[in-house]
Length: 128
DNA sequence: GCATTGACGAAGG
DNA sequence: CCCTTCGCCAATG
Image (cartoon, rainbow, N blue to C red; front, side):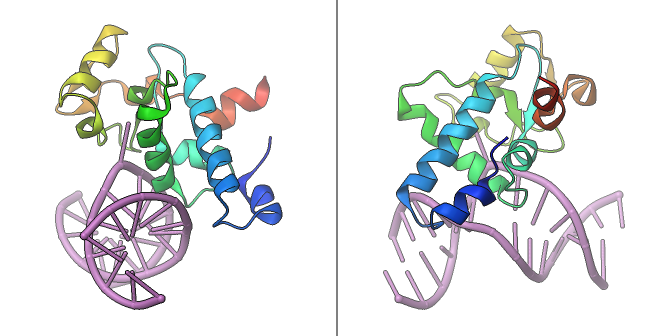
């Protein structure tokens, strides 16, 4: 696995190329989240070796909207399982609707059985 | 350019 | 426990 730190060693953090790679990596991982499962911003950042840059994962997913690519951003929630990003979808209810469509139930703005549905890329992708 | 703002999360009080 | 602070860093004003 390629960490962001490794990328940083080659490219300055301010480099456009480095940013682009980071976004691409985030989208790539997000696409691997199976239907009916969810993960967190921090888990993705951690997998990319950028443990403390969870906020940038949110930015990357935000960029995915007008990127033209199909990124299941609704499967990424915060570390408590809350739908903190739902306001950034086309409608305020779209994120929850997309989750419900794949049998992921939401109550009080939070994914039900979050721990059971949690998909950790660090674990799931390191074995494959 | 500097200050503020977040789809975050850990640590400290 | 809950609330605040802090590190993080691209984007925005």
